[in-house]
Length: 293
Image (cartoon, rainbow, N blue to C red; front, side, top):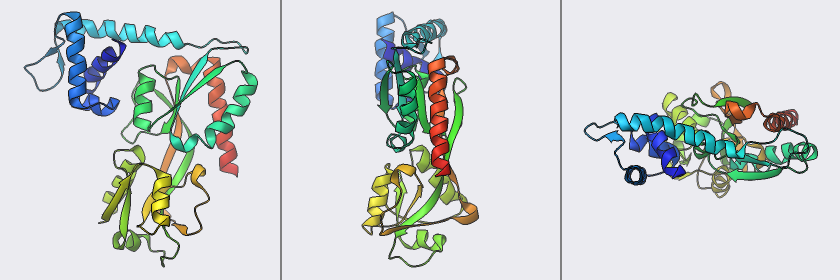
């Protein structure tokens, strides 16, 4: 029933079943089914069905407060001990691009300080990691900064800034990125991802018309598509994917360069714990090494 309660809270927070589903990675029908199961279990309805928005009725408002208490208590089950000999569990969510670079470097000193600490590394895309953190399913999330703002219950610390560049086949002549984007098949960074939304906004702001060819939410996959001569792509220069293949070159956007910010999302209650604070410091140190390389 924990899943249904989290979905219920998400619906209230985001206003509609559809909006809640988009944030937590479910279809609108799946959200509706979970709410129906919760209502059947409780024996009463939670929402006013006569309105388009998800408006709580009196019973729903009372249930919301109790649901938030239950979720808060459930999340505390994973709270970590404070001493250096800690043998608890630290759950770290991380996007793919940091799992083979930034995160392993940070875990070396972390393991040295807490040799008995168990680590659970949870892969995922930024949107889902943010929701997992908000739901108390992970303790820390290393993600891309949300382009639409931050949930008030979460805090953000920037680690690295990755410039977007236009990657093209090395044999393609010229450095006029505007012409190259518009004259060749465009390989799109999946527009539902945080990075993809940044690309979409850039194209719109620059008033660039592109010939879309392939859409993919995987930076290394986009690089390989370019390597095989299938088009050009706007991607961030991610440490884990550098250097680029010899038959791929990157063109600067000059004064129009925009950046993907990667950082740490936390819940304030967890941020105050010594083990979480130590992980954050290790990540900051690891990011400093990358920026000075």
